[in-house]
Amino acid sequence: MRRTLPVVPALLPVLLLVVGCAGYQRGDLDDAVRRVRNAGAVGAQAMMAVDGRFIAATSGPAVPENGHFRIGSTTKTFVATVVLQLRAEGRLRLEDPVATHLPGVIPEQITVTDLLRHTSGLPDYSQDPAWDPFASAEDFAERRFQHYTARDLVEVAMRRPPRSEPGLAHQYSNTNYVVLGMLIEAVTGRGWQREVRGRIIEPLGLTGTSTGEGTRVPEPHARGFTRFETGGPLVDTTRLDPSAGDAGGAIISTPRDLLRFFAALLGGELLAPAELAAMKSTVPAEGGRYGLGLAWSELTCGGGYWRHGGSVPGYLTYEGFADDGSRGVVLSVSSMSMDGFSDLEQDAAAQELIDAALCA
Image 1 (tube, one colour):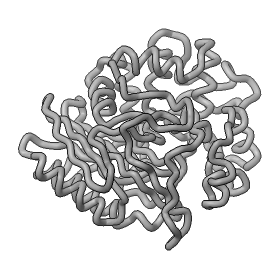
Image 2: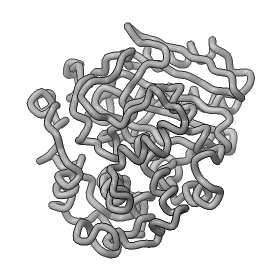
Image 3: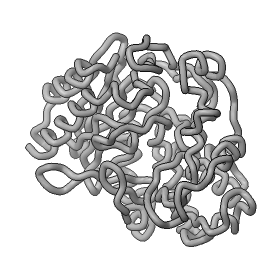
Image 4: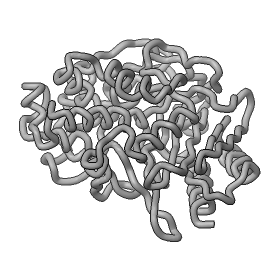
């Protein structure tokens, strides 16, 4: 949700994104997850799907197989899917100025596509040091259960000048997806959480996925830990109010549910061909390319894979998928650092795993 790192690759989250080939076995996944943990993670769990075959691995104390975790910015792919479904239903257009549906919230020239693709130029509310409830262990302890509305978060962002003119370049900002959540409600009359449940979670049978109501992570789950400063202690950040992420980062899920979601999305179950093609229409971005709520990264052996990834205090999410969704892997790491540097070794281990699994 919040952290921005040198991408290796990630949507500004970072780590294990893998698409397994037919020869990739449980032992390979065990070794890879163990290397991620040995590089500094408290715990990690991964699950891979290859042509209907599932393999899973865990490493670390009390890390369950297929446990629940906060998926952070992977929430954005769910929200983008709903927006594109509304486009298919003729209820909005991608070229619409957002002000058509939400007058007075953001500058009038910003379009729906600008929000989806992070080309709006809007400041990122989560990077405002005057607001940030996760800036230090003390801030977290004081504000971990504070509730924010979407308008609260947008108001924080709009106190700062725009980063660029709309439409010029990809500049990742959580504010874009908070506004998209507001847009979904303006168009449908229902909150983004209800639309995600009704259009994605329930039809796909994602029984381990919720839209982030409440402060607890459902059982079973690994505890999530955060290091707020270089060399500082690990703080248990499992429980928090997810409203600081809103439509940009509030969802809780499991590896198996995310495998099902991305397989359905890329396999054409959730979007018609025109909308899926629009989602995959990308522009250059840090760590690869970015479409409409979906990112793409290259492999050293050629080709690439689809992903998003996410971070939220206590958890890092990574995933990678073949173009048609038939093969993929999801990994959750149950610790993170807020300094932007301490996790680089585990990020590098993840990148090596990706190339090894996909280029073998």
